[in-house]
Amino acid sequence: MLKNIKFYLDNASVDWMGIVSLVIFFLFFVGLVLYVFVMKKDQVDMLKNIPLSQDDTNESNSEHYEN
Image (cartoon, rainbow, N blue to C red):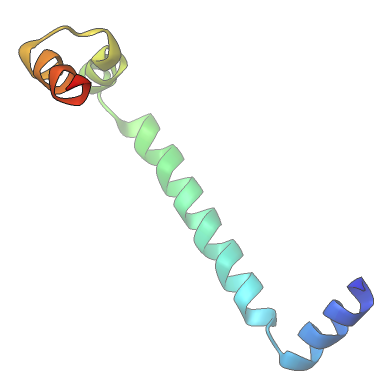
């Protein structure tokens, strides 16, 4: 079965799709890693504490979903 799929893909010349998707994934991953390393510590602390914060916006959102 895999021989048939490989044979079909070789004849259909779909090779460029695999290369393009790999390049897009690699560029996205590298960009995301660079973004994380460049982030300011204050922003990281704010994002880190979002699940633990008990401000009015979180309470109103939770009340909205409970009803």
